Image 1 (cartoon, rainbow, N blue to C red):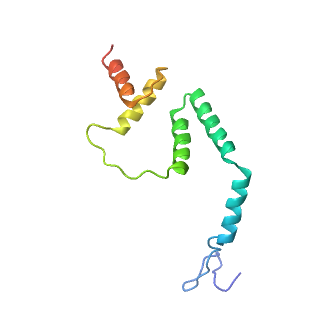
Image 2: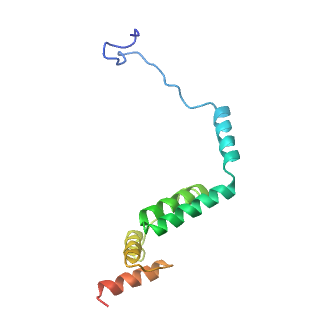
Length: 124
């Protein structure tokens, strides 16, 4: 037992033991270089396309969103916070898209999704 810890292994007041910290930049660069050499852009593209295809075959909106978030996050960066007006409700649009998928509908645009949901909710 070290002198800066009590019998239960907790640090005693006034004692500080730093952690290992972030790896050195050379180590990070070596890891990034190894990843770059192992995964060329064509391999990454094929993996994303395959993941999206599997998500669509499973009819899983969550999986589709996860693949798209991953691709967009690395491709264009994280989105900035947006102010939504009354005209646009992304949550309603996402729920509508999931309902449309459950109905087996293939949709290509948000207005089309909303139209399908409106038709179903009106009993047409």
